[in-house]
Structure formats: C-alpha cells, structure tokens
Length: 65
Image (cartoon, rainbow, N blue to C red; front, side, top):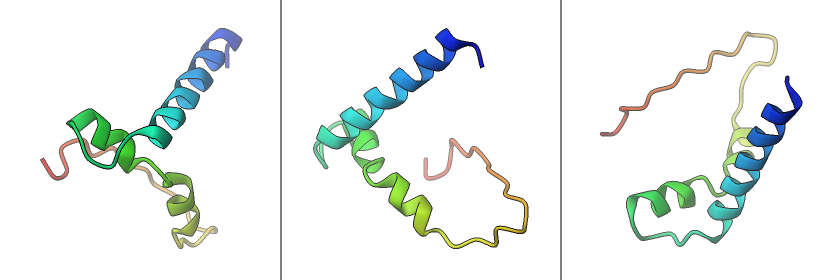
C-alpha cells in the first residue's frame, strides 16, 4: 500500500479507537456508534469459526434501520 495512504488509514483507526474508549455509553447517535465499537476486537476474537473454511464479510448498512 502507498505509505501516505497507509499512514492516513492507521491514523483514522487510531483516532476511532481513542474516541471509542472515551465515548459515553449514552448520548447522540454518533457517540452511541463509537461506544458500540468498544471491545470489538475481543468480540471478533471470541467468534467461533472454522478456520479451514473461507470467510465471507458482508457490509449491511441498513440492518436495524
């Protein structure tokens, strides 16, 4: 990946992690969105899957709306 682009993505991810760690559990829609991301890595790690099978990621933006 191009270095400036990678630095930009890493910076945005770091900023999102920081905001998620300090966002209150209640509040506006944006704050709730960041608060919901708290602990996402541990939730993904706990997800049981069969590693020998291919993984399919789907983006579903309208789920729950």
